[in-house]
Length: 286
Image (tube, rainbow, N blue to C red; front, side, top):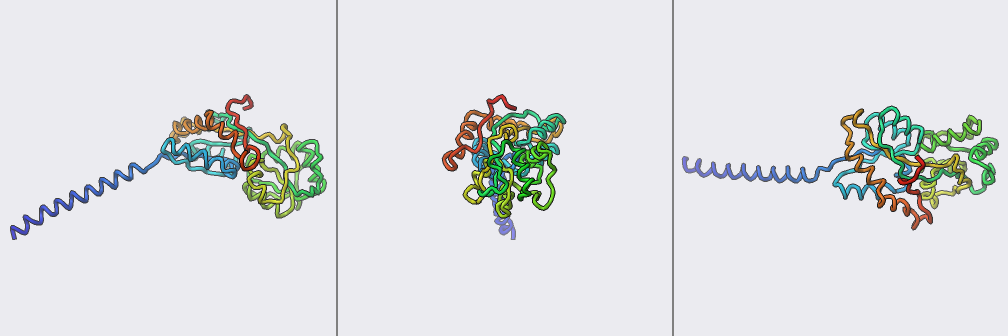
């Protein structure tokens, strides 16, 4: 019995040591695979166009982090930053951005790129907007004909711009011809196509969807009403101590760096014949 006891004890010791080694290896492997996460709240157009898929992947590889991208209308993305539910915000609604900066929620706002909104509709153009003099004139013609107009209705940058144009045109759109759908840009374009109507779209998303829709760009180039600047901002750690401010600033610096800006300058040219965005980190417009 004594001999059996002496044989069992060393075996148990060895088994315990072996289990400990396994646990240490597992713990070590786990610690090596855990990545720091950056929460990015952004507008749908940066996601729809595929731009962030490429930019974020490179940033992740360079810094061994994971970017958790939340794609929604700009108004909601900014609100998420104002609640401390993101670390960095990318948006294209200047009045809302400046309000969030003024209330101390967002800081270090930087100009990153721009493009333009376009007004799209059926090629037959029943409201005759092709010859319009301005975006408000386009909306007046659509309202006069009561042609179907599909609004995103989601407090996105496109929706805010649309509201501003209706206001300038002195029109409060209502009736069966005007439909607010509370959808992202891609879904809004699909609904507009199905109804043979008009809508306001950022040009980047439209170019990505051009071959999937019968809608065509019927009015563009009105810088006063259709200019569409994008900015990137960090969530203020003084207001929300839990945010990852240093990582957010590293991401902002990456977005406005010369290499990333050069990539933006050429993104889409090979596939769509023109770039989807114009880099603007060094531009004066802010």
